[in-house]
Length: 86
Image 1 (cartoon, rainbow, N blue to C red):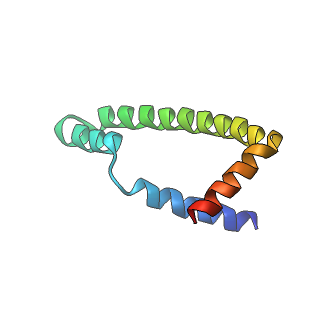
Image 2: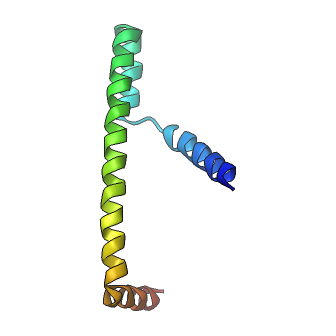
């Protein structure tokens, strides 16, 4: 089961990395105009920034999940709101 989760995560991360973002374009541009060493430095820095952002997102997700688990009234309001919209 863990292997399936790993493969799903691997495939989705590869697919999500396909669209070119600002850091990917900067790496390509730097490689073509300057050197691969400078492009590698940009890629490492962008990777570290992504790790920090993902850690922050996981931390905030835990806070929000705890809030929803402690407040049943919020769950009820969201349930009725989604049923009303649907």
